View (cartoon, rainbow, N blue to C red):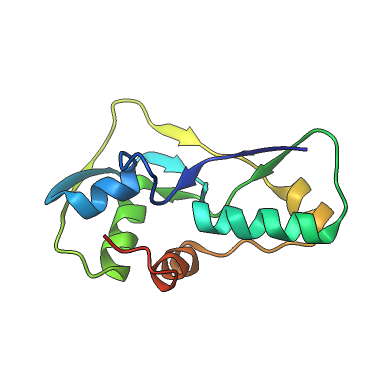
Length: 130
């Protein structure tokens, strides 16, 4: 089983967007850069669910959440963690849409993926603070 996704969350390398939100005073958030990944904590929970479900598939499944702009995602992280961060709204020259469909995952494993507010709150509860 291959899992294809896009992640956001803390990393050991400390060089992700999530890490930069905690270490910067000011950050650019692109309003027309859309993606629908999940947090690394949400992905961990999904993988545990798949293992416990004991129904493995051949091929690739997509793991994705709700569509969100990078700008809106940064604003949600800022609000949830009560950060003093200036978020500058930017527009890319060419709109970017990095979106996956996870209907095969949801159907095959009887799974529900949390919304962004819940995923970010879960990170906070898990004590992911800088």
